[in-house]
Image (tube, rainbow, N blue to C red):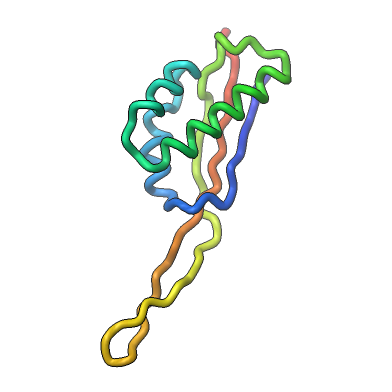
Length: 110
């Protein structure tokens, strides 16, 4: 059995989220929560909420929460918000604000 949680259209670049997900992959759920709590990255707040949601989903599926571990976690790029920044001589430069789709899967250890 597995419990999944997804967060879509998160306004943070996928490469920044990937750094945080690499820290918690294949970790125990409680240890992953502790890692996210004490890591000073902007993506940790979003990922910790997602992990809490996945744990709650596991409880609803009658899974043992003490045996849960992060089996899969990955991030995909969502749509890019394109913005314009005024520059000298009437020019305009494009700013790309990237979004992320984050998926987290918990499984029970045997």
